[in-house]
Length: 114
Image (tube, rainbow, N blue to C red; front, side, top):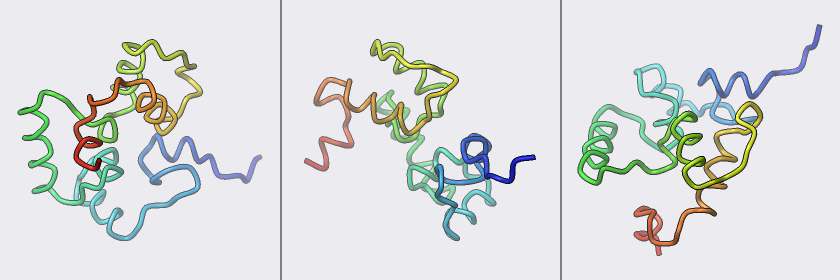
């Protein structure tokens, strides 16, 4: 029997933030309050912030990659013709590849930072 931690499984289950990174106390409280793990990973810690982000998403009809679920990322990556193994790729790796593959100027969050 293996005594090693199965980090990918814990990430998939939303029990840790990322491979090798547990949730902070604030993040744990948000998860306990019912905020989805993908939203907490994107920095949303309360219902008010989640409602605001969802309203912005509806208005712009787009969702930042940081807030996409893995199935949404898989579908988006396929539209960008990114080649990957669905069973092996992690959410974080997909986000990185999508950000590299997207044409400049399509990510509104990046435009605001520049």
